[in-house]
Image (cartoon, rainbow, N blue to C red; front, side):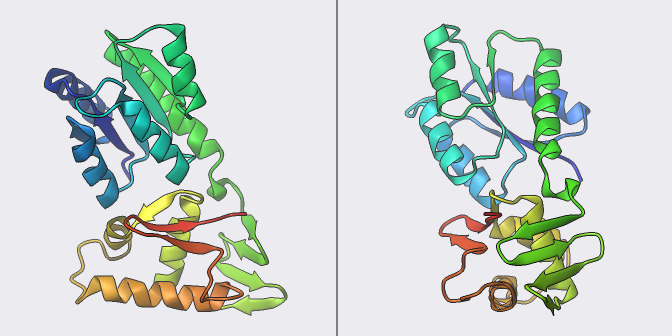
Length: 230
């Protein structure tokens, strides 16, 4: 599956160059000229990496960086800006930025930094582990078995697909639209939103101690779902 990168910059020429270069390297790229566009794209499909310009019209990119890291702390964010002072860099890192690149820049350096951030993220992916523990659950990803205490929990194939995607992006928000694309792809499912609600409900009934007050699969209103590992 292609890694998705969201590039946010108010300079259309930079967006054109960066998106073309990254697409040639096999990435799926979405671009936004302002934070309103960026937030709309983000709400529909969570990217694997965000390249974010600090100086944007109407809003400061650092404000959205703060929001992103509150909702999705493991999402890599590379700041892109014409500012090069130490204070700007320090502020960006304090707010959770993972890397910093000053304009003008070479596309090859941007590419190298993107790849490094994505590799770092994958190093800490739950899928590096054969078995993972979430609260009182032991999940055998290879054997596709779940134990809640000493009792084995049986999931349907669709429930496994949903749970697998949530685990893959543990501690990140996964949008409903992303779940639709990953689970049903191009299949025509009548009222898929309602179908997804039913599957999430069944997962909670099977995995949660109190399905009415979920602690593992939580809802992030306006975005989607978040699986908490701790």
